[in-house]
Image (cartoon, rainbow, N blue to C red; front, side, top):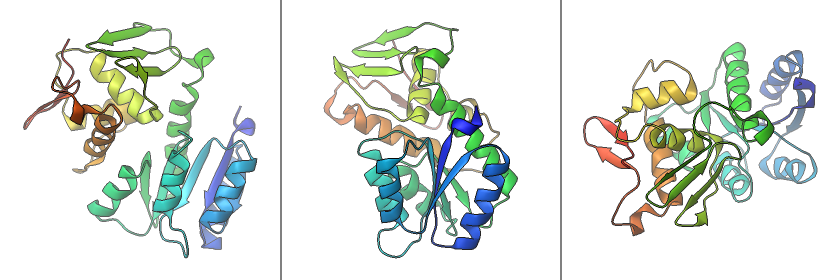
Length: 234
C-alpha cells in the first residue's frame, strides 16, 4: 500500500531532499519535493499528500510558519527536519503543530522508521482501519471520544485533533483515574523508548488543552498531578 502514499519533502538543501527521496522511494512511497515553503503549500493544494517532511530554516517563509498554515485546515503528520537541536526549538516546532522532530544530520533509516510510525497512526483515522479493541466511544464530563471515526467533541462542540493529540487523549480517557508520567505517555503513544528528557508530551498536552478550551473550564478535563504526570478523572 505504500505506493499509494504521497510524501512531501520541503527543504531548500537539494542534497538533503534528494537523499531523503532515495530512501523513501526505496520504501515504496511517492515523493514530491519543494525547495521553499510557498512551493510546498502550492503542491499541498494540488496533490493528496499524506505526510510532510519540513525543514525548519528556509529563506522567506520558514518551516514554523508553513507548519502553522498546514494546521489551519489539515491534520496530516508533519515531521520537522532541522539543524537546530535545542529544547526551545523543539518546543516551538511541536507547539506550531508538528508531530515529530528529527535533528540534522540524521540517520536515514531512523527517519524512515519515524515516517512509518506517523503514517501508521494517521491511517488509523480511516474508520475502516480503526482498531476494534476497546470501547468504541468514551464519554467523560462533557468529553466524547469515538475511536471508530476519531471524532472528539467537548460539550457538544467538535474538536479537531492531530493523530498524536487524539492518541494521547484516548490513552488518558480510556484509563480514567490512572496517572501517566510523560515518559509512559511517550512510550505508549510514540511506541518508542524515552532515552533523554524532553518536553514533547508536555507541548502536545498544552495544545490539547488549548483546543478543548480548558482555560475556560473550572472543571478541567485533563488534570496535572504535579511531579507525577497527567490523568483524566470520571
